[in-house]
Length: 235
Image (cartoon, rainbow, N blue to C red; front, side, top):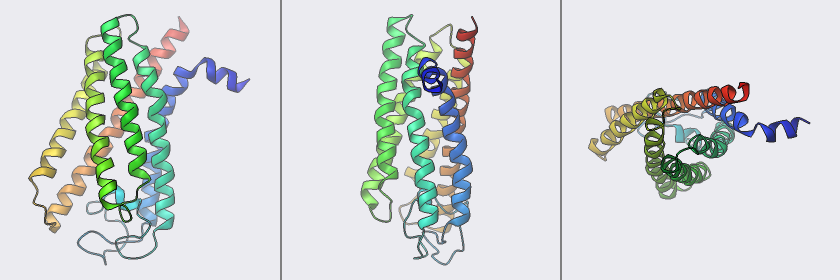
């Protein structure tokens, strides 16, 4: 009975799932930080997780930068990151369904959804290639996730801002995220390759700001899609 209800209201489920995905990621990565076995890129003796000097990817290392086993943090991070990745899949189908009344907008949203599905695949690949074991591969997948994610969001932004029934607020949220990501990319490019303490803090801090903005964006988008779906059910 519950399964049939979920199938019938799959759009509602998808909207709630994309709220749950980022929310549980924020909570459980904080737990993973507590169990991180220590070390940063420039100071292996640094105790525990240094919020402004460690990256999220450090949580997904099997061996921490201190050289100690990081299995607990790795397990928590991998599970929560995979749940986050999976939460975007049904949402990609839901978001495009709101634009069926206009062929052009529907096509734009479908292209965005397809790109975001590919981006989700790259995110899963990034998670499953810990950077202490698959250094370059991890970086390649991470960069591909960022590039495809930006492209997908651009298409969603165009569709939302050109649809009179979809509140423009959610398009502006996408634009704010795009600006933050572009700034983060510029910072990464302009910082010298040789890692200094100041450079590490800037990179790690910007990653936190960018990633939490990304999570907040999709919490808001999920809430918006849920509201629209709830309104349709009520009428």
